[in-house]
Image 1 (cartoon, chains in turn green, purple):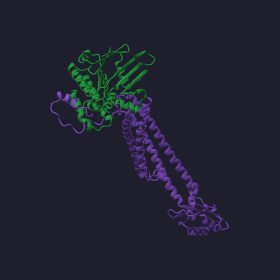
Image 2 (cartoon, chains in turn green, orange; image 1 turned 90 degrees about the vertical axis):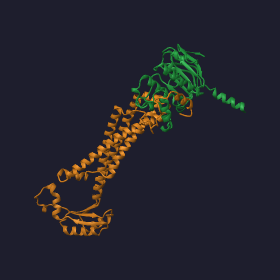
Image 3 (cartoon, chains in turn brown, orange; image 1 turned 135 degrees about the vertical axis):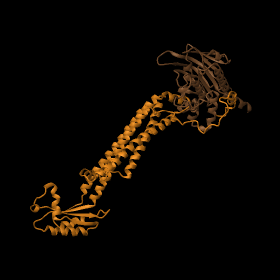
Image 4 (tube, helix red, strand yellow; image 1 turned 180 degrees about the vertical axis):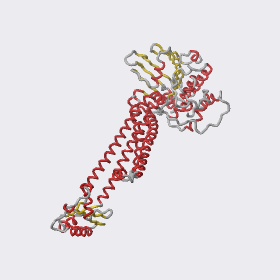
Length: 235
Length: 326
């Protein structure tokens, strides 16, 4: 009985957070920008996604976020085939993911605090239940004294940290970060990386898209390398 | 955040920011709307809604005024019945009048039967024939005005039969034709008012559809971010509904308030004109130029209805837009 339980538990744990099978994407009638992508992102794993500019890193992240549809192939997220899911299921999947955009995508009419609290607010949670956590995270990313400011008055680095905090606040099962350290100094970049590692230790799968080799060299983890529309995996 | 945090808290504690922790205020959120529609487009929509509500409120107020006035005319006319006695050379018209008055006073539901004297009857013709004429050669009919008791609509068939038998040449007019015509006219005006209010509400709905689609296009990035952070279509649609409802309420309150102020001011002006011929004419047509409490209630209801339509239409438009855009 115990053995059966363990087997079932292991099987459940083995469901990859993301699985791509021969996925290809083309825009309009143009050539395929990504082709024959077959890979998995395991639960509780950490990887960098790298490649030259224009290689399709952002498109790959958008495929995982389901904001771009593949022209062929199969994508499954947390064991669910995304071609068959309803809009409500799509929302449910997105709530398990945190995303840091390269261009931050902060809402300019909301304060830094409100931006970071946004994922919790859209889930209908009461402010009293998350206020302390949001403030704590803002202090950790160095925005404790910027929480009442609107994004247009923040520097690039501050916006980036706010975007990271917004992605982390729900402690997602999967974190997708597009160049998350592109606008911060090396010391803060190290601190942010430490935060991603800590999050990974708590059970989150992390994918960091970057072409910053100094950042990648700090961690000996799997690298997904995109080039000429194809994916190469350095284990 | 769920239970995750001990280690993150520990990590955070390694490098605290800003020294000693202060007690947090009750709320750090301004409860700011997630979709900003208070742009120039939003202000223009509020202005359009204010104008449309103003027109709808005036239509409704006007219809209510006419309806109330016509009800007053109808009740006054319906309370009066006239007996007309045409002169007959073989009979004494004064005797006929006295007989008809006696018969009328015996009829049930009659409060008062007042005959017009010969002079009074002749005076009725003055507006058409002029003054200073000798009416002796003209067969001027005599009138008896019968006032009915309040809320009584007796059957006049027995009185008609008695008049036919005892006063030949007498006819009884219960004004049914006039009442029916007034009724038709008042109902037509009310129906036109309702039709115009409906048209204005449809126009308000269409304006909201265009404004919502514009707001959706202008806030495409906001909507995309909301989707990425886990908002579903219903949540986004509710946010738009909330914003547009407030916008609609502001616009409709201004419009309805303007219409009520105009009606009150017109009422005061006509009251101050009351002694003049123009004022008398207006009062004859519309009664006192003021609407009843029902009228005020209808105007307020229209304002609320416009705000509700604004919110609901914006929500449906957003749902449709999001479904159409995957």
